Image (cartoon, rainbow, N blue to C red; front, top):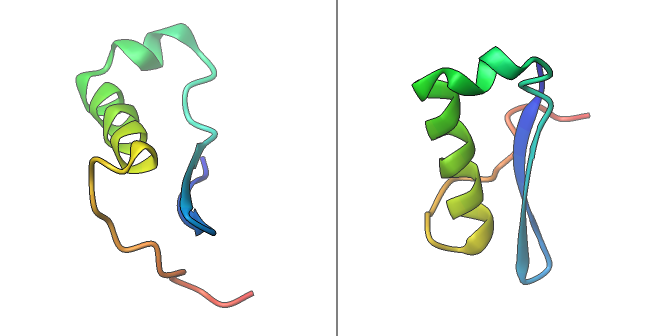
Length: 55
């Protein structure tokens, strides 16, 4: 699974490849993960978007 956040100009990006099966979304931790990502992308939550590894 892959998930990341990134600042793009004045905007923010949240990407996740988690949850290809319906039962995944019933997990409260996964739901909170997506809600946090959406809040980050909307600008309602601060997070460190510094890459953890160099390409």
